[in-house]
Length: 150
Image (cartoon, rainbow, N blue to C red):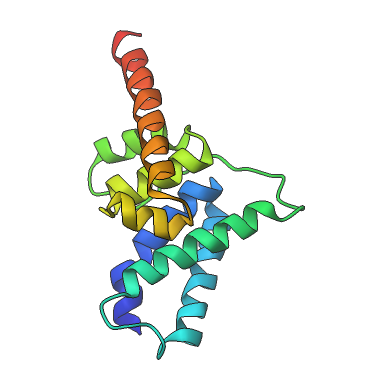
């Protein structure tokens, strides 16, 4: 179980953060997701743990966003686990996208899921995911041009 946690904790955290935009809420989500993993550990097909964790994270975050008492947001801090500074800058731009676009971009580009897998995780059609990715690319292209040309 510890090996699964070590292998996937950053993915779960970043996905939760992309949904919730709050470090404490993302940390809470990570805890809840891995507690659910403990509950379901014998029922997850070997090799499917990563996809299961991503789906559970997405569903849990949607539930958290729907909660009536969720009114606060906190700025991102610099302690997000990235490999390079460039990834961090692009991630900040991704965080400015709408929640639907953010989740699709994160799963597709950062975690490497296909559009079909992303659709399954988010509970959407593959066409909806493709549309969200197209919109997100246009938005990001515009933001990157603003940064580049001031």
